Image 1 (tube, rainbow, N blue to C red):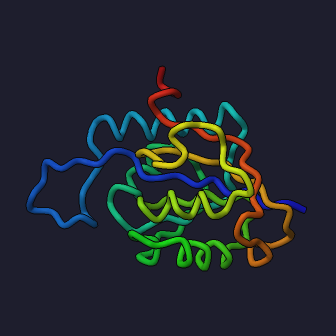
Image 2 (cartoon, rainbow, N blue to C red):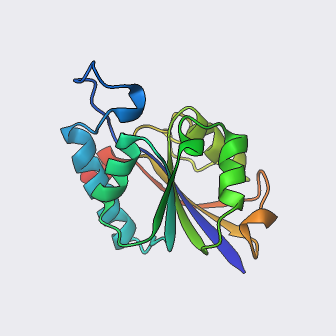
Length: 164
């Protein structure tokens, strides 16, 4: 049995609202376009999650909406600027076979790096730009059975390449 994680950093956010807290910053126009493109990329490549778990920030919520996926989602403050250990704990509490997780850097880049046995050869994997997405497969019957360096990267993409 396998489990698949689709790990996505939120799309590009706006800095045009100095009155908003970091948690409440929305996407900018580029971010909205990137989220839509990455949703199409997921569909075109058959990377369809059964459920999603996301940081409670405005920009991760808007990223999820832009993907156009009709799946259940849970928003949690625990993933807001979370580190790898917290992200792992949240993931291990999931039950769906394929999970989309939306979060923030630097935690999401560290999490992706620690999950995979060998990183993808893509030059942007290490810095995990906005809306970067890695699809990682695990040979495990449940999320609580996965560990560090056990994942096999199946795919990796960034909006700039997806959008052409």
